[in-house]
Length: 404
Image (cartoon, helix red, strand yellow):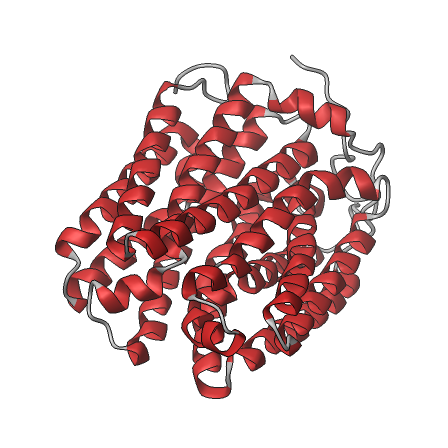
């Protein structure tokens, strides 16, 4: 077993027999609100591309860089923020990072040109990468051991709820009041969540800081490496296609612009269900759960250009897409934590780093394919990468070192 520096004590210093259970769950809810806010902030451009791009004088493909840059910065920030904050109390660190996120969103809303937009989205990436890396491993410190699985699912439900509420609400607000109002609202929400974290989280000091060298050694462990490869393939493939889901729905399925918010809402509802269903499945068998997710995502993406040519069938495929992708975050995080129970925070940093690098890579690939070939072809790219993930998770070692 590779030795890795432990990053935190198993529980909060404020735990004890007199601490009511509701306070732990209130803290978990605040952390879930943080994951909701960071993912909403990152994903808002998905529903705003067609209105944002003409005002800033760029093509839809170039406007997709608002996702690419954010994901790339978050990918770098996630493994660096954890060592950078050292032994700083995690409550203080999370609050500070939420303030960075708020500033980035407000700057993006104000942006008079695309350069300022990119600067704001860079700050969003820093806040997102840091918040997600720290939040992903907090459940064992906030609730008793029997409740850790449910608390982890709730924290990651913020990712799925961002799809069901955050992105569609932002899309609707963008259509009603303009894309600037949508981004400004995300900034105000980040400020409110920072306050909630300050009020609801207990003190969360760490015993020893995570070191970059320890994270690098952890990434070389076979089961951890397999998990990271699966994350990279699934997320890259998903975002190559999903970044351009609005053009896909409009051009392939013939959906009217006014219907897009409702379709994204259906996708998000399915994503929430997928999060909790996959969490239960991953607790029993991370491998089988990820195999099913990979197979469904690959099939949906490959079939969409062929059979999703009506609003009805396109909606059905979109819901199935959401159901499968809703389980990616919690299932891959379960795989990685099971692979490195001795270094949860370090594993979370690696997970978030690879996840967001894959968002950046996927949206960049998607933009090139859409501009050069079209929206149907980008679905084939996404499907191929999902099927490659199916091969990787089938052949790679499991967290327990076996194949089950």
